[in-house]
Image (cartoon, rainbow, N blue to C red; front, side):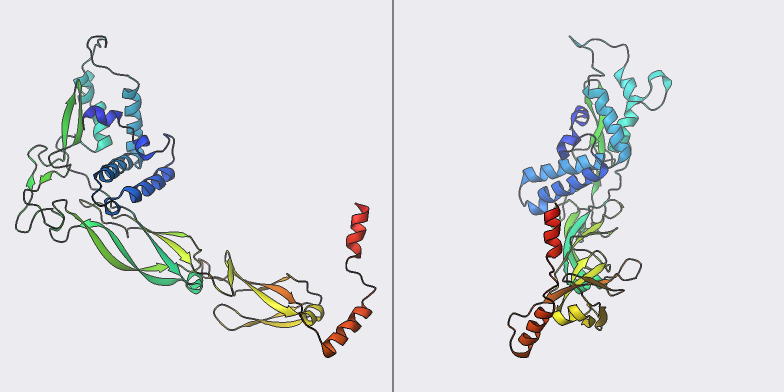
Length: 383
C-alpha cells in the first residue's frame, strides 16, 4: 500500500459507520464484522481473510481517540485537495513537500511526518508496537436457581494465541527468524508517491520486522495458532437473562507484549416451572379457595431456596391481589435480597354438590340484595 492509499482509504466506509459514530458504535460494529469475516469461520476464503484484515486495520485507528483525530485531520487536509504536486494543470506551489513531511520547513520540528508517523505507529527505526489481544465472546446457559444465587461454570473457548510449537516466533524448531533487511527490524518502510513519503507496513515481513526462512509446520510462520482452553468463570448472583458480562483480560493473548483482550459472556437463563423474575424480586402465583378469599386467613407459600413462608390473607381479598414476602427474592449486588411477590388467584370450583351446594344457595339468598354490578350500571347511566 502506498502513502497515498493511507490518506485516501476510508476507514469509516470499511466499517460501515458514519464519521460521527461514537466509540461504542464503532466497537459494536467491529465485533459484528469480525465474527462474520474471521478466518476461523471462513476456512479457505481469501476474500473473507482480506476483508478481516481491512476491518482490523480500520478498527485499530478508529478505536484510538488520538489516532482517530489525527486520521480525520489528515483526510481533511488531503482529500479536499489541500495540497497538490506541481505539474501541468496542477499549479505550482512555493514550498517543498519534502520539507513539509520532514518537519524541516522553517527550521521547526514536527510537521506532517510526525502526524502520519503517530497515526500509523510507523517511522524509521521504530520497533513494531505491542498489539492488544482480541476480545472473545461466548455464551452460557444457567438454571433459574443458578442465576438467582450465582454460580461458577466452566467455559471452553478457542482464540488466537502464540503458537506453542515455536513459542510465537513462527520459525521451525532449531531455527530462528532473521531481521528483515528491508525495514531493518522496524516493520515499516517509507514509500514515495510523487512528492509524498509516508510510512507503511513492510511488505517483505508483513510488519513483523522478522523474516522466517524455515516456517513452523503448525502455524506456517505466522507465530499464531488457535488455542483451546477451559476456565472457571464466576457468574454473579442476580444475573438477568440475556445479560452480557465483561471479564477484563480473559480474552485472546496480545502480541509483542500487548495486553490480552476481554471476555464477554452472554447469559441465558432457563425458566422455572413455578417462579418468575421481576428485577430483584421473584414472583409466584398462589391459588386460594373462595372461603379463604372471602373470610381471610393464613396461607402457606413456597420459596425458591428454603422453607415455605406463611402470609396473612386479609378478608375480602380480590383475585389478583399481591402479597409481599420480604427478603425471599433474588440476591442483589450488595448481598441483600429482593422480595417474593405473591399473586392471589381465587379458584372457583367447577362442580359443587351436596352440602357445599346447599351452603352456596343459602349464601346467594343471603346476599341477593348486594348487587356487585350496581355501581357499574350507575356509572354507565351517568356518562
